[in-house]
Length: 495
Picture (cartoon, helix red, strand yellow):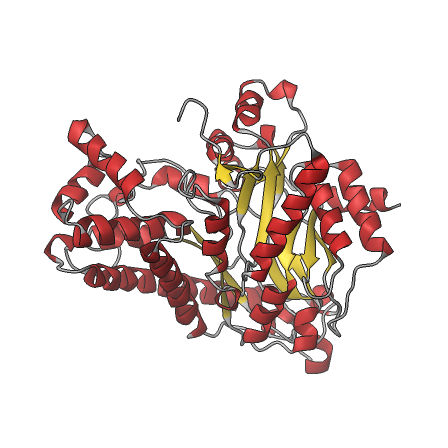
């Protein structure tokens, strides 16, 4: 019966135009099912049905429904964490895992009662909702963080649009004397772009209220009947709007590179860096600079103090900007960090960046470090956990890739211990691909050999063969970690 339910939940897949498939390749409709965690009273909610649903997820191995496993390290039994770990290692991709302690605190931070925050589920990719009480409109804004970075580099302009003045004039970086000046210029462009996105969302919301009320949906929520108000008019108990951000790791690493290479070490002048970026690091000197920026500057995903500072500052600033706004339904804006496949699509239309990324290359997914930038697994997990779940109430997607091991028992134990340590450090969410570089390279070359290879993209699962070429490449180059050593595995052909 549960197997039939899984298939029924998964059969609502819509047709989408090719342009949409480029940005949202393989996503389907992402119907989500949430298991485990604690109940509204804060007690262990894991039961026999939880284990049956995990078994069905393991047996079927299908991309939908999007199964999510909550874990409360103070309340849920160790056997439950171990069983979830076994299922992930078996399916190679699902379920994703959520930290109840951090997530409940994040929802409480936005004013939800403790009882309601405990009774949360996951909607869409990774977004948190108090079940039947929260109308989150969680993908209201999808903001490309690289756009304001480019606008700060080129005084309100972007390479893709040439000399058109898009944002405000924030100053020529060549004349700046400190990293703090550039940080202020970046925030000027970022805040301006957020204001445009919020105003557009408010306009859309007003039209929605006027032309498309939702009476049927409203009766399934707490609030609308008591208030006598439709969901779209703010009838739910909680009425947030979500804003997710693409290119987080690439922006942080670019800020790191500018601070370290330009202002601290004086390795390059800003004028030379901008010329190299404009030319896509062409020529011998351009390539030398690119390699230096790629390999010798601080990286998000390590415990370098500059990288930790810049990543935390960006998270904090975005949270504060959004908290200063109330949406058209009377609720807050929730910042989030999940990307679906937008990190591939938007990467394809952005120029070269200060951390050594070339024009058109994909961005890192979700809140995941740039591929190859975080050589130590523990440092990677600690640096992400340090961002703080309270300032990311919309959810984040951390993607990890592990080398499969022959000794499943030993790998399961180490896998579960690593998840628990990450959650105790404050990690909000994590999801996995249990596969190697070589396996994915072969699957791209010969799709018929892996017709049902399921991969975790960024908040959802897809069949590898269905993804666009850029997305396949992004899955291939994601950092692969060896759980035994805790080290990143070198990419084939690289020492």
